[in-house]
Amino acid sequence: MFENLLKYKKYRYLSLSLILIVSAAVIYLTQGIEQPANGGTWQGYTLGIFSAFLVLLLTYLGIRKRSYSSRMGTVEGWTSAHVFLGTSLLLIATLHAAFQVGWNIHTLAYVLMIAVILSGFYGLFTYLHYPQVMSKNNNGGSQESWLQELAQIDDEIKNRSGSCRAEIRLLVLSAIENTKISGGLFSQLTRSDNSKIKIQSESDKYTSNKNQERVISYLARALPNSLNHAEASAIDGILSKFSRRQRLLKIIKRNLQIKAYLRVWLLFHVPLTIALLAALTVHILVVFIYW
Image (cartoon, rainbow, N blue to C red; front, side):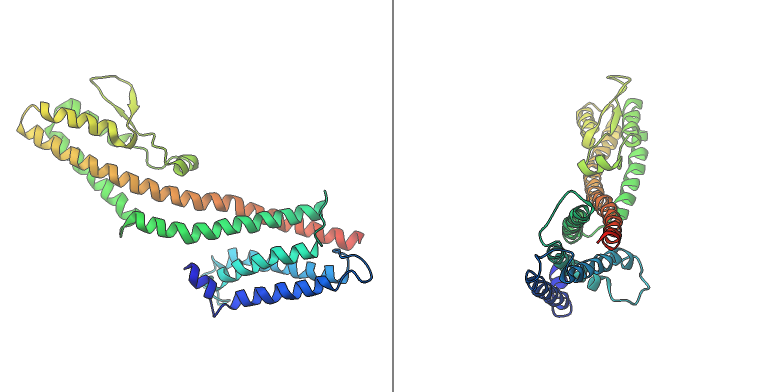
């Protein structure tokens, strides 16, 4: 996919970005004859207009990606344009500022622009890298299919537990009911497992069942001490189901972690973009009012 973005329409946006950068450099270098290079010359104004236009154009990508019926180009094309034009914006805006910074609204707009562009690079990485990671993690399946299988396994475990003594039946039911799959954003990012279990013979309190290890360990110890053949067969089957359950939960939690990475990026990128638009508006108004 990354290669397709680079080569989109025979490097259309790479070529356009190079033309913009060279043109901006030529415009910038024509300064310094009558007055030093700065954002207030006609060259500076021209580069500023280019920069503002690019900001608005790039912001439109977020709208276009959600406008599936739009005929204004493809999402792939807009993404390719977003990458290359965003990179060129960094250079053109720097030339517009003539490498001058200070403690003012103009520098704030510039800093926010850099933050948006850098977060955009990370966003590009996440959208190109993590879908492949998720595909490998799913290995031909999907989050929905794993959740369905997990529900089926839980039902099978409950049915098999009917052949077990009350202590084991309550144990497996406790493990199922107190399994924590999702949790908050931080838990998803770290793949924290706050699953609990209550073992009646040991304590009335809930203890950690992280990665289903406690219930699996308990069942493995209980198997040789089965009351009869029927219980032994049931425990053996339940143990096998919990092993599969353990694997499913790892897959599901990894998928949630990957989606959380994308959510975190949006939590930064979108507010930064809004802040940039606000700062850019103030920057333009200040320039026209006081310059």
